[in-house]
Length: 177
Image (cartoon, rainbow, N blue to C red; front, top):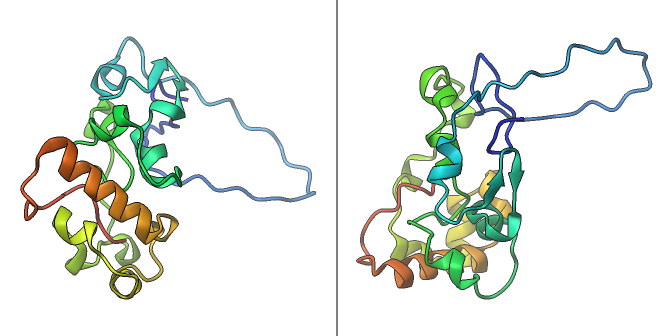
């Protein structure tokens, strides 16, 4: 586990999906995953809310990704809202600064992972007023469906309010996959 709490692979960095297989078959254990961070602390230093409390320890109560995706409250905590930096659906700052991701991660050519063109760089104003019908049209079969429309509106409104962002400024941190 990396200092940012994610698994890092030598081939893909931490941009990986984790899955599991439940079986009753006897399987040989593989070697434990080794640590790859060394003395690097970029993720700890870059986190705008100091959610990475110590190497490998992430405090969800301070994590933008947790609050923009999982928190169902009507209002985001002030410390989160003030630090959104346009993130309205998760946060990848700790992964963006990771040398493993900068050096070794590769873009995929799998079409299913490409963003829907109409969802690249939506405006915060558009996201703050998205209707249920627009939501269903723009995000079918998307991982963003985990975030419900009221939560997306809440997140966009908080980003606009906290950062005094012009309502038509694109938000590159929300993509429809």
